[in-house]
Length: 406
Image: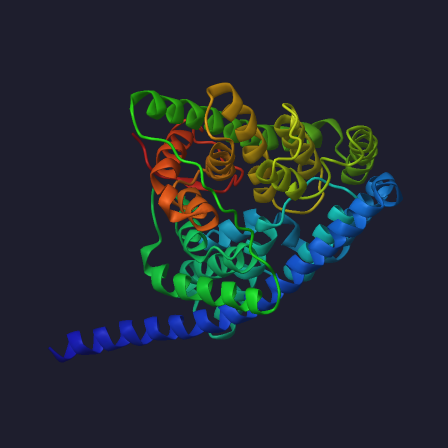
């Protein structure tokens, strides 16, 4: 009996320590996310006001980014791959320098017009902070749990969707398997990071949706079909990104020449295509999708192509916000084709393409609910389920472990 009591005390004592650390990690990551996010929005405004002052120099800044990473970055250039390796216990160290490198590289990429996101950056920030805390306290056996806590805090601090952030962190490293031991501390870290960044002035993206339709066979069939299309789109993004990274590395082995040559081509095409419409995060396409502004039928595929090319040659940034914009703008097109409520289908695309490309199910359903309203849960559930099934097990995260065999 005494032995059982000692084991329980040891287990719950360690778990209480993880919860206490989750509070600290949430605060730290929330602060970093807030200033990273607000800085990125300011940079976006500057570039949008003066696209011809910045976008032509994308290739030069790309060479600078590669130089800094190769000279001083060590293994931090592995990015999300390194986070997954440590979370899956295939590696043991994430250098703290990853944080300033990924923030600086992402800011420069966006200032000069690269089409990239921010979520991957925030997740890397969170995981690096939590891993560093764990190292300082010699908590190696809780390595995976700490990575999940950090990823959850990073996602939530930037997007302020703590429930989605929690389940994203729990499910993204291992397909079909949740890291349940991290649930409570990850949830606490997510809420604290979200509230911290909000308190510091980072605004949450949220849309009021008033559209709905009755559930009957025809409408259910439409939801199934658009779910499949969103799934295929996310799969195309993930597969295309992986293929292009390999292709570019094979065709132009020197990383400096690779980013310089492709950077020149990108800058020319970005300016020719509506003067920088497809540069940066894609928040302009998201805003246009939900405010009745012009969305072209080719916006989604243009943003997809610009993003995978940008990220395939070494520019820094995430993938998720471009995925949101791809899904929302595709949703506008599909709503017209299937005679469905425009804003609702754009919202469904926003969530489902993200879920397909990341090979996650719970996170996209929940992010749809947190951004657009929990009363639309049935719609998000159906569409995201079909998108997940029809992504053919592709993921933007190449180190994601696929353990489930059917």
